[in-house]
Image: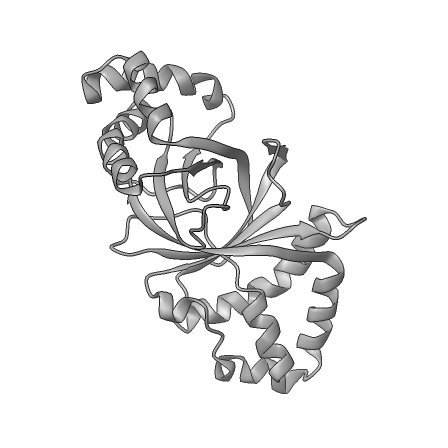
Length: 260
């Protein structure tokens, strides 16, 4: 049982996407690297088994959701060193990292060796190269749609307060883009830990859209919404953006698995 508790603590997975707006949303994000010779299909087969455990945790009120995000057709920028991410999300950070063993009592009783077998299969398929704790700090009224395509952008920010204030104004732009039908939702998260200087990103955004063809409309949707929402030119907006943050990575994703 001690081995199981250690494994479950190690496999704490986290959120990069949100659903509807909530007062508080925390996420623990796990960044996964496939073992040599393994594929995303192999990982999905393993994560399907873990998803059953996360569903039990959700049903018990420990988490609000668990999600596995994979790059769509491998589309991610250079420098991203992971193959997929998983997410535990919920309003209570003190609960989010826990695996109360009593809720798995029936599983253990049915097959005392099941967890050891799953642990061994997991280790042969992937490894978690790091984890991070994040909090949602802003987002559109319509939350990110997990059934659609999503773009996750990762940013390095020096002045968090200034950046959050800036994104608070830009929220009007994203609401206008939703109204125009370009995107379905947008959210901003900040990293609570780790926050050291050597992390590649301490803020990230996620936006969802229903068709790949919306990518062709993305920049045009910004250019149309910015003057109306902010009263400045797109060129001035871009100048302000580059001062506030540096984008360090981007990934086009879909949800492979999620709790119900």
